[in-house]
Image (cartoon, rainbow, N blue to C red):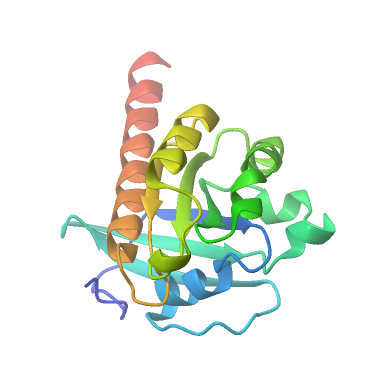
Length: 188
């Protein structure tokens, strides 16, 4: 488990992440699990929170998380939610087929406002195996079709695979930043 308390030293890297998905897929629960390490399924207004983590126990990184709290349903999201986002976490509920069927539109929405952000596809509610209607293979295939960087199955309720998700997202964004720095340093 990553320590969510303040780490010693000042991190020099901040990544902005936006959670995107249909209403009731568990975005707010996932947001609270990642940022406060607790499960709470009550909805919030649009909220943001910054956490500090160690990536591979050596690099301090801050993740600025934004929860859209279901505003996608009303198409009231504006470019300000996405401006300068480094990553978009597109979430669906593996027990709700309609949330999976809407992924293409959600990826389009995320790409429209932040073309260069890395996209991650997340199947939430892994604890609801008995009600599962979207198979793992379908999620992986859709992830590839949509050009997502990674695919995860998690449970915000039980915390299953959430730490792996956070570490992988932070690591991938860090690697991308290093690659861009290298490219600009040597070629410009």
